[in-house]
Structures are given as C-alpha cells and as structure tokens.
Length: 453
Image (cartoon, rainbow, N blue to C red; front, side, top):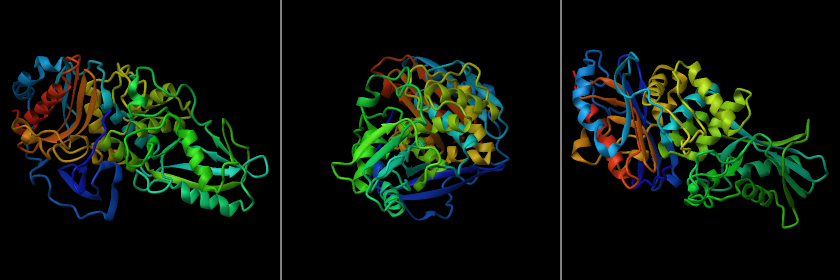
C-alpha cells in the first residue's frame, strides 16, 4: 500500500525480455516530475541500450549451489528484526529451486500479491485487451445509460493515467449519436457483485488514500484530483456527476445508479482503457491497489465467475494453476495485497517471476517491475553500501504493511547468473518496518554480489 513520488524529470522503466541466452533491456522514457503526472514521450519505445552488464545471463555462468547460497544468505535471513521469514531462490533458466528457507510457508504477502494478479490477468485477458466503458440509449426519452465495464483509470480532462479512456471523448460521441436533449443519466454498475471492501483490509484503506471501494467505474483511480493522493469515498457517483456535466446537463439532469442496462439498447459511444499490459506495468511500478483489484475482477469476468472479491480470488488461483504455478496453501481475499487474510509463499512468488520469463504473454510482469535504486517503489531503496551491488541488477515488486515486508523479482549475480527470488518477512515489531525493509534489501544485495558456488 505504497504511494510513490518520483523526484526525477525522466523516468526510465526497464522492459526485461529474458531470452534463452541472455537479457535484452529496452528503456521507456516518460516526461515526469511526479508519478501522478507522467506521460509517454515520443517515441515511446527507445532504442535498446546496454544498461546491464554484457555477461548477464551468459550460458557460461556457473549456477549457484545450495551450499553457496546458504553460506551467503544465512546471516541475513536469520536476523531477529525480520521476524519470521519465507525465502526462495530459483534458477531463472531452468526453474529449479536452488535454495529456500521455509519457502513453502504461507505468509501475509502484502503488495507482492499483485504479481499473482498480473500473471492471471495477462494469461486470461491477454496483454492487448482493453476494458470498455459504453453508453447506450435508455428506456425513457432523454435517458442514456453508462455501462460500467470495470475501468477505474478513466480521465475527465488531463487525467492521472497515460492513455486513459476519456469521458470528454465519450460525451462527445453520445451527444453526436443522441442529438435530443439528455435529461437523465443512469450508471449501470451490475458488473460487480458482493461487498465493496475486502475482508482483512485495515480500517484506513479507503480513508487513508490507499484504495477505494471496489466499484466498476472511477475517474483517475478514484483520486479527488489527478495530481493528489486523496481518494473519494463514492467514486461512481463522482464519475456520474462529472460525466453528466460533460453531456451538457445542468443541475436539473438526474443521475441514478442502477443494476442493469436496457436489453438490445442502441449504442451511443464507447471508450477503452489502456491495454492490460500497460495497466499491469503501472500497477506493479506504482503498487496501484485500485488497478490491482479491478484487474483481478477482469480475471473473474473472463472465467465467467462472479466479479466479486471471492470470485476474483478463486479465478486468479485457478489461472495460476493453469500456467504451471503450484498454489498449494495459497489464500487470497483481494487482488492488491491490502488484505491481511492473504497468504502466499515465497516459492509461489518466485515461480510467478519464472513463469513471466518463459511465457511471452506475461512479459509485462517483468517490464513493470521497479528497478533497484532507480524507479517505481524501489526508487529510494538500496542506498546502503552493503546493498549497492544490487542497484540496477535487481528488478522486484515490493510489499509493505504494518509488521509485513516483502520483495519478489529477478536479479543478476556477480558472475552473470539470473535468479528469481522472493522474501517475505512477518511479525517483526510494529515500529520496525524500515529496518525490516532494509534487511530484505540486504538479502537481495547479497544475492547480487555473490557467485554462491
């Protein structure tokens, strides 16, 4: 549940395409001074640059041994400030587990849960899928119905998310297709079912700006303003009022929320979200909780399951099984990792990273991972000299709740081996979050600088 601000003018997000004999890195450039106002510059995909060492992933690299990894990591994973630890290291090229400590233990994962959501939605919806928001004619004269499709990234002007569907454009389409005066707007929210907050969420998830009630329609992820951190408590109603104003409705226009749309109604307009691949990248880089829970529901919808927290959780786990990930002992209550009822193991998380490297449709998982000491939620981390070996060589998803810290991703060792790893720490002192976080960074740093043979 992290909110990240970038302090640099150019944000480079690395796309890591892990091939059979090495890693290619493509740099995406964004004009930005803050994460809440970034825009893709032209060209979006720049010429690949040699960011990583040439020997990275070299076939001649010697695979670390279990004994070597134990010697390198034992002093770090047993530190008391980490509490209980689940850790796993897997050879990226073979998928073989090289070392683990309670690797199969089911732990509270925090935001690394988003890796499971990312893999599942890319596998089921596909990287090019875009979430539609449509408007159809209503049953009454002067009535139009906005059918919410689950897109929470919509913009009503200069929005937060690059490439977001524009309600301004949608309103223009509707006015052109429906030249008669519009007197009533209905918002159809029937796509989602069940409760709109997950079991296990802390009480400040909605009030603290970390998330919004799970609804199928929101502007700018439910932010009160595109550049702010504050979220609204009624995102559907806020979006409805804004869309009504864009339709030209004054104070007399009625806005209702309903649970159905007219059958066989005349379509009046449609806009679409950024691609699922792009949404996954944003979700992972920024640890965007609102996008995460919306994407988990997309998995449920595609699998013809209820678009609820429970339906999404079951659909995600079933999908992970289908891509060859062992989900034994896993439990999900949401797609974001905000729930303290979630349970995942380090071994499962490392498997997710490996799956993303083997399956082309999952590559957005790798391209969305923050880069140690450089981008996303890892921008300000790995500053200690003992962790410096990991800077730029570690790409990983972070997780943080009170008494929970986690990190899962991929890295290059000093001799060019590529490893997938995950570390989850639970139960450390409630005021020890920064210390635990640094302890996990030191584990990643130890992996990056060792040959571990």
